[in-house]
Image (cartoon, rainbow, N blue to C red):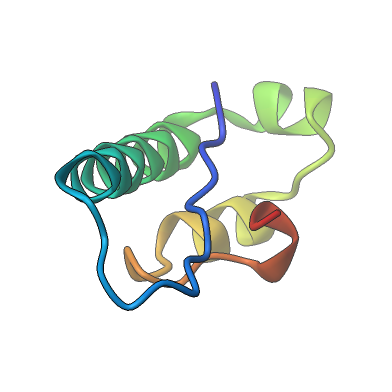
Length: 71
């Protein structure tokens, strides 16, 4: 499972490439969260998450990205 980072942009105008990149990153984030919701207790334990934590992350809105994901 990969976690994709959405870059913060200070620019007023984004290039088409930046818009496409942001769109693809947001789709990947949604896919990763959906996959996280499907993991069983054993696999969640392997990555150090409880079912509650995994469900919380999986149910975040698409635009709700934790600050530590943004570099």
